[in-house]
Every structure is written in C-alpha cells, then in structure tokens.
Length: 171
Image 1 (cartoon, rainbow, N blue to C red):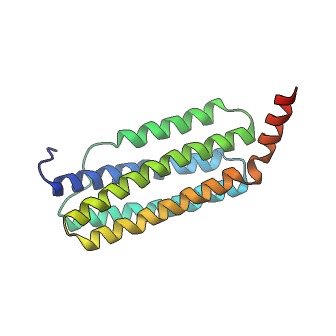
Image 2 (spheres, rainbow, N blue to C red):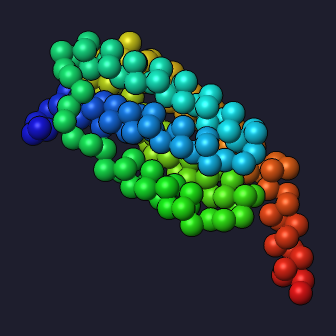
Image 3 (spheres, rainbow, N blue to C red):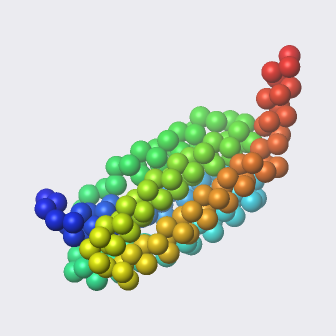
C-alpha cells in the first residue's frame, strides 16, 4: 500500500497493530505455558483475553474507515516474539526463564505503547476523536500491562535470582 495521506498512514498503522496483536494472540499461550511463576502465568493469560479485545477494537476501527486487515505481517512484533521464543529455548533455570519472559513481554508492551500512541496522534490530527479515544483506551491498557510486568520483575518472583547472583558475585 502506498501511503500518500495521513489517513493512509493511520490505516497502515492500524493494520500493522492488528497484525502485531494477532501474532501476540498466538504467542501468549506459549509464554504462559513456559512461565514457572503462577503470577506470571496468570498475567500472560489475562493479557491474552485483553489482546483479543484489542484485535476486536482494531477490526472495528478499520471497518469504520472502510478498510480490512491488510496483508503485511508486522515485522517488529515478529522479531520481538522470536526473541521471546529464543529465551524459552535457551534459558534453563526456571527463575531466570521467568525473568527473561518478563523482559520479552515488556519489550512487546513498549512496542505496542509506541504504536498505539502514534496511531492515536494521527487520529487526533485527522480530527477523528472517537478513533483517538478508542486507541487511547487500548494504550492505557497496554500501559497497565507494562506496570504489572514491572511489579512482577521487581517483586518476590525474582528474589531467588537476585540472591543467587549476589552469592555468586561474593565468591
């Protein structure tokens, strides 16, 4: 798709976000299965439900603009998911794996936050207040998911990893 106007750019952004969210719908169950912490498993499963809602919202937004999902795969999300899959294959210590999964998930959240923030700004520029509000709702949810991941990373779940690292460093 050639991008000639701001509306074209918004459509491109929405299609890219839809591809990203659809990829995440496939990846989150694998991440939940690989997680060792019950709290992390729950966070991934809860976010899967929310991600499915994001897909529905994006479909609706594109339909409002008379557009479909597009054909291009979001390469950014594909790369982030590939990094998470590598962690699942390479990290053998359960607590370290959970820490790696949190890091991978936070990179995904930051990518989504950037994408939704940009799309919302384009919608505002185009005077599409309802679209901007819809995108802001999802942006807020992505921000909350990121905060939860930070809490998990800073919480007790990683305490064992930190204790082992300190003990190893003291040797």
